[in-house]
Length: 163
Image (cartoon, rainbow, N blue to C red; front, side, top):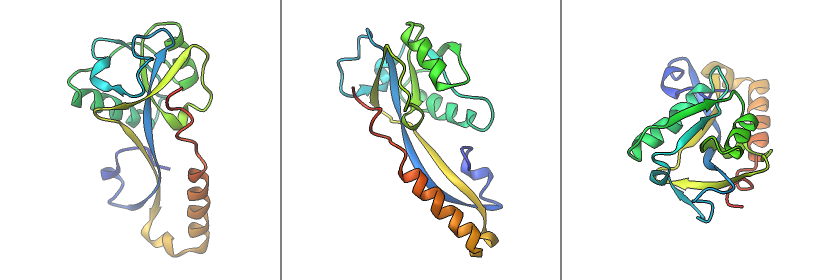
């Protein structure tokens, strides 16, 4: 599985797309924007932010968040960071800030948070399998890719949108 920027692995591997997962705004239940169906990212300018990306390759996901915020004209002011989405949601519920997290990582919703789709722009986490070109001819590799595609197709992306 690859969550890094694809340019670095394309030299050796072929990337096979599995899932394009949009992000959601994670807001405390009393936040001024919970009444909105979709949150314009620029409306989160000036907010305190909660970071929720685990260490390792997933840090590439943080680039999606910071890039989207930069495109909306601001940078995040992360005041507290967690290495998992559940704990980060707890920080949001406690009123420490807002967050953007991949919807696919928010199946276990924390009490006291509201999730909203975002736009302007909407960051998307792209998850791919990296396969050597020569391995694509192998039945085992093709079978594994098919199983990964089926598993990715079952990942709920809409259950974490508007409440």
